[in-house]
Amino acid sequence: MRALEVRSRFPKGPNLSQARFMACAAHQQLFMGPPACGKSQGVLEKLQWAAAAYPNNEVVIGQRVRLDLVQNTIPHFWRIAVPELYSNWCSREKFANKHDMVLYLHNGSYIRFTGLADSGDFGSANLGAIGLMECYHPLGGKSISKEVYFAGDKALRNPNAAFRFLAIDSNRIPRNHWLYKEFGENGKPGHEVFFPTWDENRPNLPRGFVAALEANWTEGQRAAMMQPGWGEVISGHPVYGETFMPGLHINEALSERTGKDEDEWVAVVDRAEPVYVCWDTGYVQPWVTWHQVIGGQWRCLGELLPSFKLLDALIPMVLAYTEKHFPYCAVRHCTGYDVVHHKDTGVATSTFAQYGISPICRPTRSVRDEVEQIIRYMSRLVPGQGAAFQISTRCPATIEVLRHGYRWAENREGRVGEIPQKDGFFEHGADSVRHFAINVLGLSPQDHRRFTFPESYASYGSKRTHSSFRSGRQQTPRYGVRANG
Image (cartoon, rainbow, N blue to C red; front, side):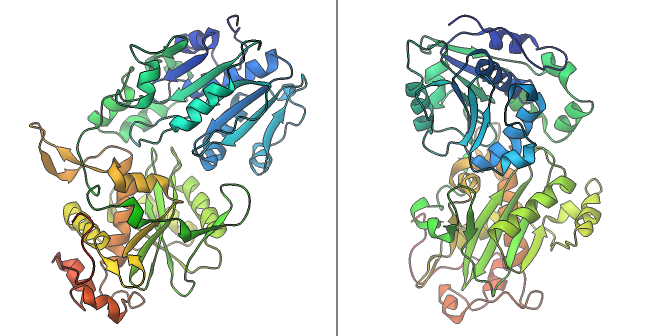
């Protein structure tokens, strides 16, 4: 395959790494680096060019979750697309609501957008190129699966094709990740890696964008995100890892499909009880989770974590998600105390009020005490219902928080410290879950009369369940065993 020519809508021309990536003719191409260095734009530009340059070919643009595709990749593609290339060009909103998201070019080629989940859907025999968007996030561990990657590689093995390539857009990948074996120092032939830098793309970034990123990161987070090259292995001991058991705590029956698309589902709820929307706000990585307590069983039922969203843009998304997946439910809101009281985020109060939202926000005592409270809850069983804490399969990122993503910080000697790591990603999911524990499980009956445990739940140590949680006393369950033995 000959080197590709650059035909694009880069606002000020491609930066050096983008130009090199556009010209690469390798079968496998990894564009890996910090955020805001032009990776996604480079991959999308190249895929659009390939579809336009070669007639009657299919190009697939895939992302792990269809919702992320709709919220992030499609808006990005619409900013760089050349509308006159397409015979069915329409508004981004109309396109995102279609069941089959396909753009048809006048030359007979087409570009198909798809959520990949855990298995690749790479379609027809005239497949020419695949783009895997946001393949890995270093602060979140969200990754395209091996099965998707190798299914795409297999689908592109046609030696007679005019062009065949798989392009990967990714943040820094750690050296213990399976993709390192494919593209690392001793990677396979035909695999090329490009390491763009933040500084080389500064001229293409909007004013204030760099300052907004830096304001939300600590020095350690900035170093982890901004340095080019392969990432380091994540350290620290999982906070919930010894207690959280996927087979016990993950429950796929907490949601029901309502259509063919992955995003067409409703949560299984008790409409006699309120559903709680728990907010952890922040521009870089807001995280919202949905919870309900039924008969003493705490259920985490949904999640939403769109990156780079201010609160006034996030609230409509959350309200729409709630209406779609939790119809006809009484809804209450809770958030962190600092969100509505901190001097820098006090604007949240007025923003919530504009939408008629008045969130519960109790002061926090100690993160470690609250984490231990959640661990105690997760360690219990409810007679006839299973684990006292259950989480829906609709919450994959929050499941990763509980499995191994949220970790205790280590001191300089490598010993586990007293507080969890501020990693810039998993911490927000953990805080969203913790807000529920603080604001709902931590309330006394006088403060929140609707929240009650049945008498049968008293068998787990004390009838005064609320006071035992608030005082920090650990109760030993009479039935069942703790998840960590």
